[in-house]
Length: 514
Image 1 (cartoon, rainbow, N blue to C red):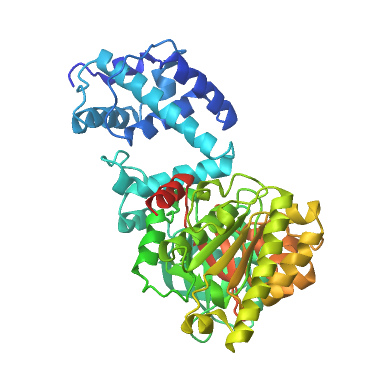
Image 2 (image 1 turned 135 degrees about the vertical axis):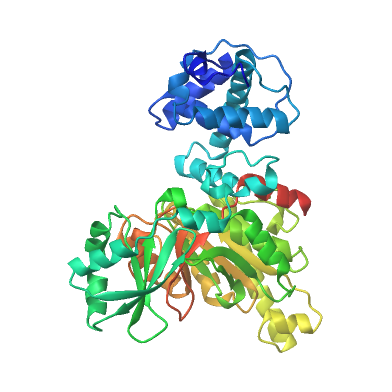
C-alpha cells in the first residue's frame, strides 16, 4: 500500500458511472439526505457486502465528489482497508495504487447504487419499508455474505460485544425517578433486541400508580424523545419491570431465519395452525396457535410493519401445511402485498382477490363453504372439523387473510355482514379470519365484528382512540414502529413483541421451494 497515501487520497476527487450518478441524485432526493456523498457511502457499503465485482468496463462520466466529502480524516483509513481487503478476499485485482482505488470506488458505487435502487422499488418508494429492508439485510450478512465487511456494524458483531456497546442507563433511570420522588433499587437489567428491561424494587408500594401516571415525565428526564418506557408487574412482591427504549443504532433485528428455524423445529401436527410473530422485549420467541384464537384483527399505520406481520403468519403456516391440510384465501385490495403468493398451490380458488367484486364473491363462497361443512358435521354427528377428520373426511383448514378490510367495507358495506357471519360461526368449520387495516375506526369495524374477533395485534397507530379500537385499551400509540407490536390473546393481558422481518424475496424463494 505504499502508493495509497492517505493525504494524497483526501486531495483527490471520485466519480462513478453516468447511470449510477443519475440513480444517486434520484435516491439522494427521495431519501431526503443532506449530501450526494451520503448516498454514495451507502452504495459502496452495499456493494462491499455482495462479493466479487464483475469485470466490466464502466464509464466515469458521473459528477465528481471530493474525497473529503465522501470520506473523513477519521474514517478514510477504515474505508481503504475495507476496499483493499475486499479485493484480496474475492480474488479481484488487488488495489495497490491511486488508479486502482478510483476504479474500485467507481465500480462499488455503481453496483451498490443500482442495488439500492432495486431495494427502493421493492419497498414501493416507502421510506420505512426501505429502512426495514436494509436492517434485515444487515442481520442476514453473516450467513449470506462472503465477507464481514463492516467491523463497526452492530448487526455484524456477536451479541455479547453488542451488549457491551449499549449504554447502561440505570443511573439515569434512578435519577429520573428520584426527581419524581419515587425511590427504587435496581435488582437486574436484561438487554433485549430494542429495549432494556430493568427489574426494579419499589421502596413504597404506593409509588406503583405514581410511576404509571408519570411515564411521560420519566421519558423527558431520561431524554427518550417521543418514546415512553413501559411498566409491568414484576415477578416478586414490590417489584416491577421497567422497559426502556434504546437508540435505533443498538436495535437487533429479528431475521427471517429465526422464523424458519422455529417453525421447522416444531413437531408437525395437521390439527394446529402455529404462527411465529417475533420475539419478546427480552428476546424470547413468541408464537400462537390460530385455531385457538380463532380469529385475529391486525391494525397499524403505514410503515408500522403490519403487512410484514401478515407475511410472517402466512409463511409460518405454509412451512407446516400443504394443500391437503390448509388453504390460504387472500383478499388484497391494495393489489401488491400478496402478489408473491400468486403461484402458491395452497391458494384458495387458485387466485388472489383484488377487485371489490372478486372479494365479495370470495366471502360469499366462504360463507357457503362454512354452511356446507356444518351440514356435513351434523350428518356425521360431530361438532368440529377435527372430529370430522377422525372419521375420514380430510377437510383442509381455510385461513382467510384480508389486507385492508376498511377499503373493502367503504366500497361495499354489504361485505361487513359477510365478515360478521364468518366471524360468528366459522371456527368449528375450520375457517379462520385474519383481518388487517391501517385505519381502525368504529365506522369500518362495528362492535359486532370486534366482539367476534377476540385476538388482536396492534402495531404503531397515531392516536389512542385507534389503539382502543384494536386492543380495547390505549398503548399502541407509543410503540416504536418497524414491527414493534402489542399482542392480545383472548383472556390475556397484552404482550409486547418485536416482529420478524420478511422481505418479498424471502416469500418468493419460499413459495418457489414449495
